[in-house]
Length: 538
Image 1 (cartoon, rainbow, N blue to C red):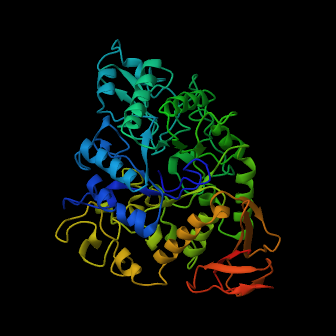
Image 2 (image 1 turned 180 degrees about the vertical axis):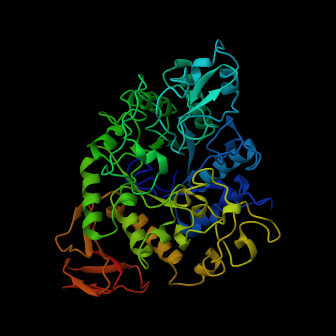
Image 3 (image 1 turned 90 degrees about the vertical axis):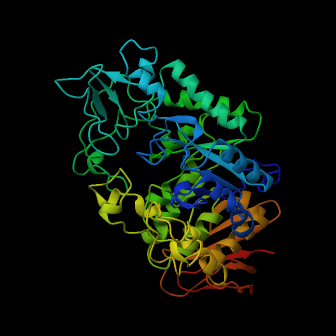
């Protein structure tokens, strides 16, 4: 039984999920790269120390590692950097024995250019797998249209052998699968069946909205200077309005098909899709009209909103309003593609962010290291490993992927002290690490542990309703969570001054800054600057 099975609800509704970037989590053999046995060795930390209910593993499949695992050359094997297939089986088995769910990355949009399918596809125009990828003649001695890669540059590369262009949403080494080819689709469904047969509990679907492009392949219009941009600089990609290179209507049928395959395993599985769409009705369309597509689209809206109470409150309420009846959302504030949470927020707001994430209605996803307050690292140009953003520093993702900081010793306990980690360990690790923070009762790690434990014990926080509280102001976000048996109120003071809010009678059961706070409140609840409090109404 998974730890988070609760009140008959699907396990993932009550769960706290934790993303692991395997290259950077734990190195078991001293080669400087994190691996699957390293993850297995840390299951006690995840279950007994931190208390999460499931893990999402970024790709560990066989790969040339041009994009560090997101360029897959064999979906049903483990890359030697991470171990082998037996290591994957052992990790899944031991995780389940400890009540921990295992979610794996499912890269639907593309493969590596070294994948056997693509090697066949590019070998000749009449190869049976030619149409498994997207090949086109050029236009005016150039690419077929003006689409650009997410990583900048044309979204098409010319192949000298067959004298046509192939499409790639990302790097040239990541050719797009043709999701309008039935044979290719069925082969991808076999990949899902393979991992379901090994016992995984679901999939995080990479680039889930980008699989289907305009069948007419029309040019994207240029973006005017006043066109709304995403929350971060995307370089050349921002120069266009992306009408035709993602989110075409038949992408929904692809997800319906995938969901049927996943559900056919007979277990309660989770599919959560990477959907970088901020129009809420369109985002919500990936649930499906009958909740027959993704279990839930990834909810990145808090990462994109301004960090102030009016903006955060509006975002939370808007997201929950747009979740379809019977649907369930998720929340996240960090991942392997974004700047580290503690470096992105105003100073002193990490604890407020953690409390917000773990008390909203929905399934929270934590990013490894955020629980100890790991900061974004500055990687010198000569040490960068990320293929994205080599020329645009703000896009380089290495700073959010540095090794997990387990201890104050050399290499932070990630790998042996005399090894060279694949990315440098952050210089702050002697102070910011699991070992040191466990010994400090007031540390952010121990705050996370208290908060996750309280969440597990609370039906209101796990599955209850959400209602913004009228005591909210421009600096205080207060909201009520309520189940049939319990009511709690969360009050978060984003301000730089102490404040008092009237949220009714109750007992303080959690404070972000005082682990011993537990007074009975009969009138007003006092909040220190940047303090979050949970009040149980008993």
